[in-house]
Image (cartoon, rainbow, N blue to C red; front, side, top):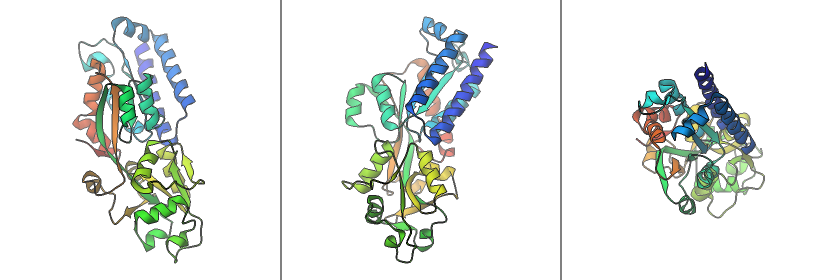
Length: 320
């Protein structure tokens, strides 16, 4: 009965985290979730037993809100297939598999590894040199590729006039030099452009700033979304909004957003892979030092053909 209760808890936790990853998660929510699962494990005696045997039945991931739902989906599949660790490998103890995934942004993912508050950090950008230095011995896994698409609401008249924006036009829109849609094209309505971005400290905004904005800051009144899911929702809800929506999120919300070409290049899988679409970014997982046997067993699944299939089903471009 204890195992059934613990397994049910794990499924509920992962499902809840997948949802919050799309809607935004605060640090306090993450801390409470971590406390709850630790209390549940202690009640079932699993934490003490695992510690006694030197085996960690729980694996924790923190970071990118773009990557969190992907990791949650893979973790759910892994748990459904094996349930307990001894089914993964007979040398492992008969402990329930617990995989905890929380979303807090790419920077938070790197920080959690540096500070040792999670086993793995999830990043939807390249890892910075200073982060590598602080980690000391980073073990980096490339899961796939994503792109930031310049997307608008399907009811926005812009896409009926043009399906392409130049880097200069995008820079003028996001900086506030263009404040109204008729400044982008004179045939459009005199309606204010609603710019939607991720939080300025997030990995997605760093990629956008480097790829498009350069030294030009975004407009001060841009709506900062706590997650990529929240950013996409803002565009879906507002006819006059524009934002840099994840390629994966666009695929998951097909027909609800219109991704535009950038400098004549369409954000397609082929163009992301060959590098011709300029606002692309890697999806990576980072770990400090060598993996434990149980961590390696799960990451083998993540990097397998089955893991790649799930990544692709979630709308991203798998690395394998």
